[in-house]
Image (spheres, rainbow, N blue to C red):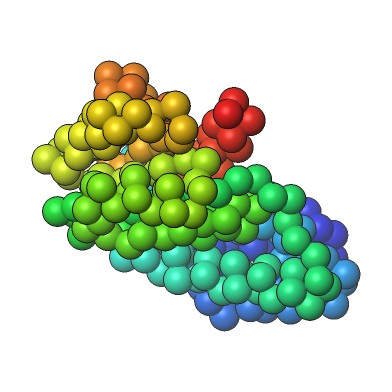
Length: 217
């Protein structure tokens, strides 16, 4: 079977949130000499990207997204396993601290982005949800981060993303870190308004934008 066909099956497995199919695709591809890393971008990752678009357009709903994120965890685990077995590493892209801002318990999208960033070669420190704003900054300094990424899923909590920008300026750290924002009510206009360096609406564009920002540093 060709890699293109495996990519198609990988996309299908993620869009269906079918963990059994994910494992079958991974195992069958391995027999053909095709690794999980090979299938990550144009297979599983593309399936996640398509599902994210459908979610934003109201064509699929949260339960489907949760199932897909659980299936995607199997992929990232296999990627890490393969890299460990071959004693190789993905090209190091940079260091990111990521989390959902305080007073916000939504973390499905953030978790998917963290997994995809990790699989793309970033060192990712996932701070979880309801993260105090100063903790984003403290952890970025502790881990020597290149990027501070914050997620907000409510119109009320997205204001905290503005506050992070203000806190960085007040602490004379704005030039030390790049900032990325995301979340359902968040937009490029909002990023421009508050002075964030980047915005992404799904996991794949998150990886692309993060890579661009690191190169700008």
